[in-house]
Length: 305
Image 1 (cartoon, rainbow, N blue to C red):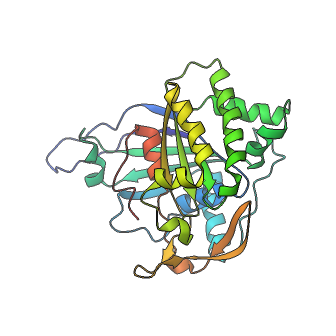
Image 2: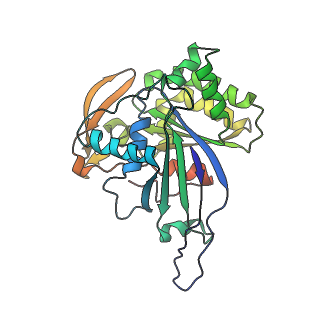
Image 3: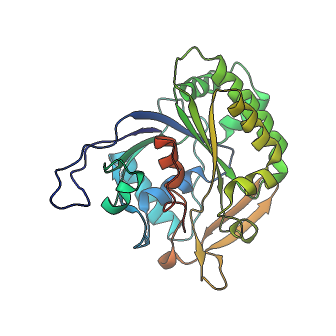
């Protein structure tokens, strides 16, 4: 993903002059295993259905033809209760879909950082097949895998999406992450300290939902080896790590919440679901990790449901 901020002429004081945007560019990538929910995450973010009126997010706007395809994919597939097709593993790096989205925060929330500057995030994200991550354990010398690693090495930040119900794969994830981080550290690219956001997806599931507001505790409880690997990397001075929870579907009800999804299957490889009630489709936690990866700061309002 490529994140950068551009000008937005707005301020909380009608008499104040327009502010310049938050400065600085970041280059990020989204990674994750098969069925971790990467495409559903991106599709829900692009479509931004039934946004909460109290959300700090003003709008999410797709930019370009490929990004509009992502919105149509969300509308035509997710709303109809169908599964999203997996990303093509055979595509080379130049054929991977590159989605660009423009995320604007409302003026009154844009100023929460105390710098008096509005925020607009323009997001470009390549949707890689999940097999790339698992191939780290078993393949070497594959040109597509090497291209993938080289592309990720250009990133100053990474969004690592993990299906929160795949805790039995904790050891596999930790081993894959160890190899991945070794590749990053071996690269000769001179970058500032990287940020890695560990994002637990599918948190509409009941066992994850109850701890959604304690993402670090939840991650360390369900993925202790993976979390430990990331903490070791962070303590070595190579970068920083933070934890997030998200759901592409959301939940139904408040007093007695239940997943707004119909489970198709569940195994060691995770949970596969489709939307249950599209008209009540309200994902959560989608923008929070993006904001942190861009700014290095948590946005408390974005962490709310």
